[in-house]
Image (tube, rainbow, N blue to C red; front, side):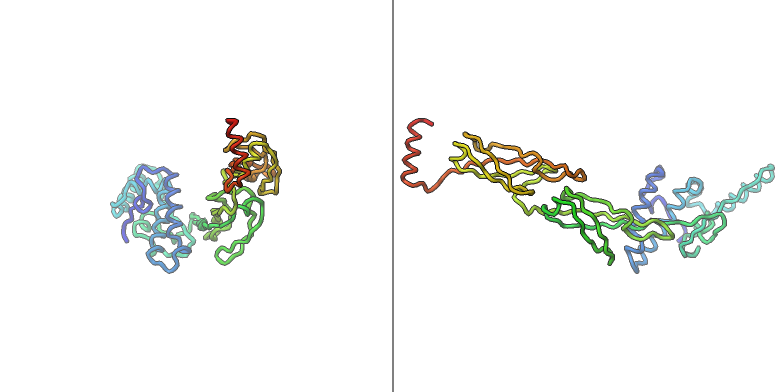
Length: 302
């Protein structure tokens, strides 16, 4: 390969900022990393191109030289030589372009003619630096029941044949992602390990509806209790609670049980609230005596 359009390799334009370059490099380096594409020669080739593009575009001096010569790089050596000669003739010292070192094990032949000619190739070590690559980030899904997420607990995950014991805080939500730093892929050339991102998939195995730290539930009460009042035993996630139902309670009435909801994420021992909606049960299959009583009530225009 003779000339590589580095901007095209990273899917960038010439107006790209340093931040854009860094972001694009990370994206494509991860995509084509050898650890994720074993025995894939095409991916290996693209991985090298991505790193070559980053090494030029992320260095302001190299980028300037690349932008200056680009596809006309073959004439750059003659131009630089003439420039140096003019500089020396004028009494100024002409500095040469510093070579770029790389300890990744590749030979200069692994990289483009453009890179080797313009920037000295990767086999030169004088004045250079070792290129360190951050390890690949891993993503995993962890399935839990809602009751599992109610309390802080530990679980052991197996990632790439390694057991990782993690603490799951109470109150995690469905779809929430947490980061376990340093438990991703190993770094290259002494670079830092990647991170492990765990996304929670929580199934509701209860009668409650959850919205953040609040819980909602519908409780059926007899018509007589709604009219006369009484007591009702309600099951919460933390145990049973007795409620006093006020006389003349209407269908759809809501009551709040403060602190009986779900734990607030990483704010233990704080809890949300539990909201109970009363559903008044209309009796069916009345006996003759019960019907007579309701008929008597009807005459009072109740």
